[in-house]
Image (cartoon, rainbow, N blue to C red; front, side, top):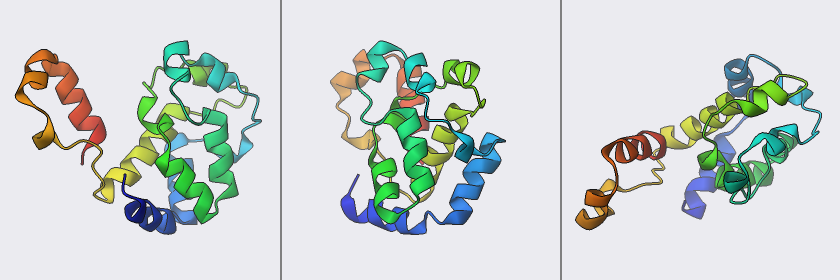
Length: 143
């Protein structure tokens, strides 16, 4: 993502956005114990690609500064979560990380910051990727 766009979105991530995340989660994410069970629940292949553990992402949301929000919005972790809900079943506080990740992705995409430009994908690549993969990527990474 472009740095200017992230700074703008981070400024807009006010307490109302945090409240929206809490509303989507159905729980107060501030009750996170930072125990790491969420990160331990992620597939090792996915976990090794994450730049922030899910509990660290929650921690940054709780900090709530512009710099913390920029870190959250720049995180690859948001886009790597496959919403398997293994973390929810292991979380002692039953925080719904997949819903939080989806809410954060939605906030980014609603600001018009697309992470995938379908017009820049070559025909060769499009012919090799299964159609369901293309559809899933376009739904997850574009507005």
